[in-house]
Structure formats: C-alpha cells, structure tokens
Image 1 (tube, rainbow, N blue to C red):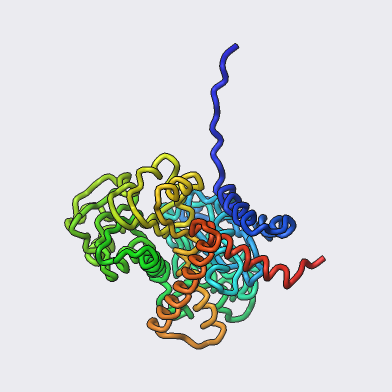
Image 2: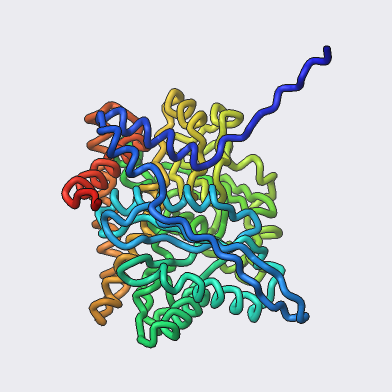
Length: 423
C-alpha cells in the first residue's frame, strides 16, 4: 500500500489571535461564558460590488466589514485594498483593534474592513467608484456612533473623503466623524499621518528605558518603508538611534554608519516609493533584514514574517511591531526564550488609532487642536499604556504580549459585566 504524504494545513491568522486570547483568559481565570462572548465577532458583513471599469467591462469585487466588539464604544478600524484580503484576515485585524482600543483606554470597540482588489492595476476613477459602492452598501453599518473606518493598506485620506461624502449623501446630513484619517480641510486631525510611526518610536523608547538601554547607543533595522516604517525610522533617528538597515518589497539597504532617513524619504517620493537605487547605502537582500545585527528591529510590513524558522536567528534585543501580527505564536515563544523583548502590535502600533480617536473627538466638538497638542496627547496616552502593560507583565511574570492581552481582556469584560447581556 502506498504511503500517504503528510499535508501541512496552515494555521489561520485568526487562530493565532484566539491562542493569545485563551492564554490571557487562563492567566486571569476568566469565566468561560465571558470568554465565549468576546471570542467571536459581533457582526460580519460581506458585500459583492459590481463596478464598471474604464474600458466599459464589469468586474465584481468582494468587500468585508467585521465588527468584532462594540462593548466599549463604536467599532473602529481601517479599510484595506489588497488582492489577498479575505475574511480570516479581516476578522483578525478587527479583534486586534478591540484589544488596541482597550489597552489605550479609548472608548471604541474593534472593527476592520477590506476589499479584495489590486489597486495598483486600477485607475483613480475605478477606485472612486469601488469605494463609493462599498460605502453605499455599508451605509447602514457605518456611523459615528456605530462604526468608524480609517485608512489602512493601499487606502488613504482621499479614500476616506469618498466614504465620508457617500455616507453624507445617503444620510442627507454633514457627518465628518463617520471616518478618520481624512484630509485636514475636511475635518482631519493634524498629526494623524505620522501618528502610527511616531507611536512605534515612543513605545521603543519606553521599552529601552525599562531595559536600561540608551537610545543614542542603539542601532535599528526597519522592515517596510511605507507610512509606518518610514516615520518610525525617522522618529528613532531623531531620538538618537542609528538606523543601519532598511528594506521594502523591492530590496534592502545597509549602512553601518547610519542611513539618512530624511534623505531616503525624499528619495522614495521621487522614485515611485521604492528605496532601490538610493546612493546613501549599500544594497542588500530584503530577506536579511529580520536577522540583521542590531539592537532594535521594527517589522513594519506584513503579517507572519517572524516565524519558528527564523526567530532563533533574530539578533535584536527589542522588537517593536509596527505591522499587525508580524510574529507567530511559535516564534514568540522562541524570542522570549532567547531574551528578546517584543513590544506587541496591539500596543506598539496603537498610535494611529489613538490619534484617530482624537480626530473623532475634534469632529464631534467642531474644535481642532494644534499638531503639538496632538503629539503631546499621543505621547501621554502611549506612555501610560506602556506602563500599564509593563506593570501587568511584572505582576503575572509574563511577556509584554500576554500582558497586553490580559489588560485588554480585563477592560473589555469589565464593561461587559457592567452593561450585562441583553436578552
């Protein structure tokens, strides 16, 4: 009889989310009924979006919006456009938003959305038609007190402006607080564009302080040079860190004397966003970046890039997760065993949602703050959140990631118990 080949079934990203949730629940001995309530998304909306393309043909795209929790406030989370968008991914991202908002102490729940498409192959007119159709189909799902979207992968302030306008047309009222991450002239917040990257750098600074490391003696490697990676790299450089390696989808750069991040940002703006060909550093393989010799590693690109296959080769002392879900649970265990401090995504990259909250507040008040005021408030929120998570990690003698989940679960279930379960 022929021997059957073994088949490896990939673990879904949402399964990873549930693993951490189960660990946190076990640590605090959470009632199983409460765990059952907070595990699954509150609402999942899937829409089919027929769009006429510029050549006159029709294509049908699939859009998603997942509200994981609205216990602590309206759903909050970005919308991404990418060929690989799927329900499992959107569910995971929505859950992470629930925990992020709870950790940061802001009155939102967690949500996320996306459309399976390749925006790089679409014109602006096609993207506008797609966005408006998506917003129209979700007009009853979204709302300032229901669910507030924001930009994410391959979406931006213009995308949010289209969504806001479509929502307002359907409602017959001006409602800028239905989205965040808008252009400033439409009610967007100053400081929102740089918030996630600046927040990553603040979290790294606090971790370094806790570990007794001096930033002006540290080196850093950054994977991904989009909005988050580039701003995090610049902010770290401004704090005295020598950024010695950077990568993007096209390749990598190395300069042991330090890369001039401001010069690289200016260069990529005129090079279609690519770091390739930059004269201020030596080109290297993009695959080297995660195991590059440095003190601080910032994965700011995709999910599941640090795995059990490469975790043992990571040389950094601190990992600041600029991306969502860059580290698998198996890799997490290896990193902890090797003494690497991981600042988890639900804390490290929460600067974006925090300033999105500030924008929502400003829109509701009709009163807008200076960029300095926004940045000071962001720093205050992030430092407090880091200290809260760090204290829990000391109390339970656990990693920062598990501590972040413990803190978030406590805060969500506390509100759930106070509100009760409507029946």
